[in-house]
Length: 182
Image (cartoon, rainbow, N blue to C red; front, side, top):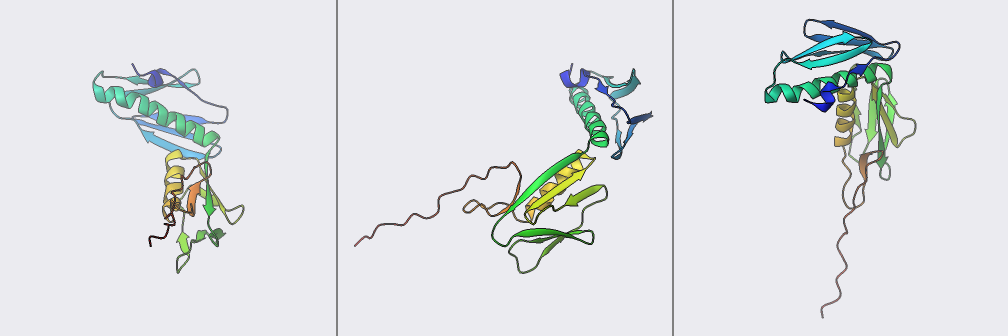
C-alpha cells in the first residue's frame, strides 16, 4: 500500500471541501481548485480530514493512489497558504517590469519580451532583477515560472539569463589563451 496514499489530508481552518461524484473541490481564502478522481480511487471526508482509498490493487491503481492524495494535499495547501516561485535576472541591462497587466522583459534582444500571465497567477517585480510568481495552483505557478525562465535561460559561460532564486549555474571555462608556437 502506498505510504503517501495512506496518510489523511487534514483540513485547516477556513478551507471548505466539497466531494461530488468523482470530483473534489477545495475552496479557501486564496482561491478555489478542483480535481477529478480516477475510477480506481475513492475520496471520503471524515473527521475534518480527507482520506483517499484504493478500490483495485493493480499497478496503475497503486500508482494513482499516492498521486491523487498528493494532488489533493497541494490543493488544500494552495487555497490556504498559496505557492510562490522567485526568479532572478542576471546580466548587464537585463530587467523586468510590470505594466498594464503584462510582464515586460528586456533581455538583450532587439525587442522587449511581453508576457501575459494566465488567470489565477500574480506576478510582481519588487526590483528590476527580481520576478515573483504566485498563485494557489502549484502546477500553474511552476509552469509560468518555467515559461518565463525559458525566454532567456542562463548561459554556461557568464551565467547571464533568468534563473530560479536558489538555482546554481555551473559556469564553464572559456577558451584558454594558447602559448605562442613559433
